[in-house]
Length: 338
Image (cartoon, rainbow, N blue to C red; front, side):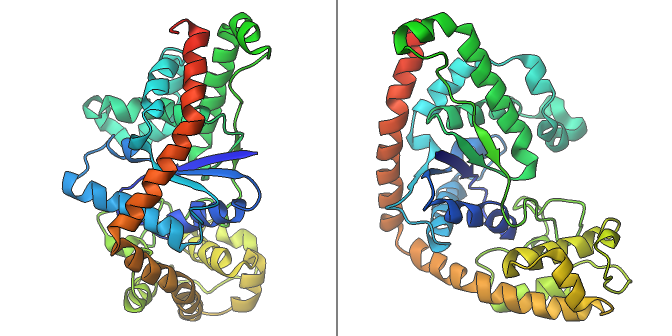
């Protein structure tokens, strides 16, 4: 079992990243060979302030380590330091089909009515994501629900490559397939954390309102204020879990509480049913502060030592290339480039 996943260095590592991905990363590190990437090439599909990008790469790396990822057990690196990702991406561009990309819903959501002015990178980045995964022949990819479609695309690309070059693969490798078809792992405690200001919108570092998210480096007062002012409705907390379906802000707070406390949604409703939101928010604030603030404090310590972060990324890149370089070389041999 080889695991690959990554997070974009877009700044403001937040609760959605933590509950949707990093908690799962940490739980996997004793069960599989794990490769975790700061996907900095993905981040530049939209404009990034150059003076901030390097800092953001360090912030994500510090977040990984502060949350419990051991750099000695896991390969941790930033994508742009391993050239095999970009080179394999071009090869897979020539395997993927336009119709497959046209079905990608994330591009449609991000571009909206302005798609003609979006970068080509934003449109094709699912192919780079496929290259990220296939460059290591990863068997499993922990992702949020919104990324599942991209794993399906990676599988389609891998399958088409295996089919297109079946005879050549068999001749050179004595196997019937070359690329592994990766499987998504969507089992983080909260696969999709929503905005504190809009329960129908995903929590995001790109949201203009800082009040929409809990940043991992927020202090106690910031967490208190954000939860206190988070959007709610006028009803009381129900006992029936089905009543959450039409109350997205309540569902989001219950999901966050569940992810941090490791209790089921129903157990939380049993505890707070009939209560006003104020009680739920008070208890949620307390457990968030207890969980998040120590990680934020450790992140700040790690970020203050950039040479240590750089050493983790350099070591990780060397280990990543040791795996991806021969896989790319084999790929080139299969298609006749070597």
